[in-house]
Length: 318
Image (cartoon, rainbow, N blue to C red; front, side):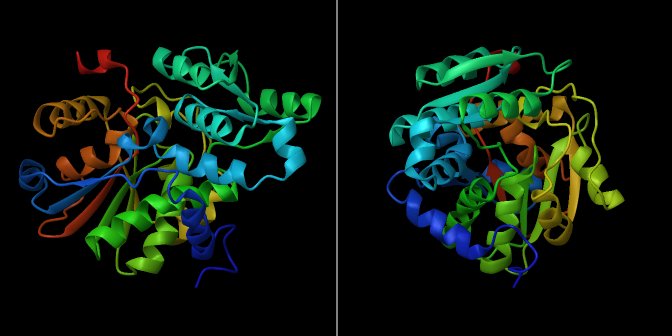
């Protein structure tokens, strides 16, 4: 249906699903009576916080690296990431015996840095407020002969991320709404393509931090808007702009983009920890916080929510 317009199609998501079979976890879908009462709806949480490396990013990373040719795998890959793509790339590289270099901000969460190194990746730090991570990564890729795999604007990454929504809809059936966190747009782009094929009537809603609403501004203006690095506890959504490949998909298939603030994210993390006994990182709570606070009226609707990750600094619960 959208094949001629986008860099990724549902066929690509199907192919990614086959590559990930038996490697990526088929994460659980959880429900909660209390969550339903807060939202006045029937809410289905796709728990990518239980995915390998702790986030949905493993799907796209493994799918992307597995598609490289022999020479590219031997030379190695490079990526830039605040944490979850870093960990995912490092683990995927370890599983596929591919050397991985990661460019990470020096202020990335300590546990994400530790996990990335623990999976065997080389980590190179930069200052996210004064340096450009894309430029650093491209320079290193050229110098070392590495393949650059960005965290969201890469077809095989987008296709891999779409498999989470494919699993969700196949498990719970048709949805009226699907709420998805937005950083660079890889997750929601894949989700929107999967939902358009499997649940055509589903309304896709993106959710960003209040201080980092570049995607919302981009959708409203019909062009990619770049903002300064946002200050928010949702470190996975501290991107300055969405991608050249993800934006056309978002503009066409995403109905609206809304925002939540850091206090609402803290409340949502606490709800998950206390009521549902799960750990969800701030970025992973974006969609859930929008539903719980009824930013959009979803009364009596069947609502899917992607919990994108669980790699959290526990100090955020203080």
